Length: 189
Ligand code: IMP
Image (tube, rainbow, N blue to C red; front, side):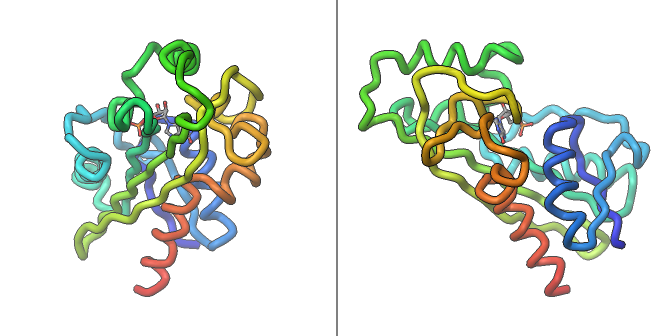
């Protein structure tokens, strides 16, 4: 099985990546397991810039294949916010409540949103990026206890992402799509 380091300290992201890539023959290990105890400043203006910052910082230390993701929620009625600032929009655990408050007067026909994910991959040959997206809408209350971040308010079909099983979320999520695109690129050689 090929081993790739995931440049993240987020246990939820790590679990999702391992669930998606293990059946494809790729073992994902955390940056900490690989000996890279760093947390570079994500000061890029785009998801791609931030993913590149993270992948380069960890690759410089471990010198084996690494990928990093940068992801976030883009809400149409908020002109794409919180976007690249999704992790800093509110203190951890309060992001859904803050978003629901900000959206309280937004009507049903203007609640569309998307999760975006850019993965940067780096090995001795160089660096590339792949993308994934997932379209949904912002609900009116928090529902479900699975997942993390904005999952309890992000509705796809008749469920929030926090009401989905891991398999259901991975099959339609932005990170699932980007990880499958990464696999396709690696499989091409
Ligand atoms: P970063 O990619 O580590 O900079 O963080 C992105 C932020 O976007 C996370 O802290 C979450 O708040 C949010 N986010 C990214 N992906 C997801 C997801 O799959 N579900 C819910 N929230 C997410």
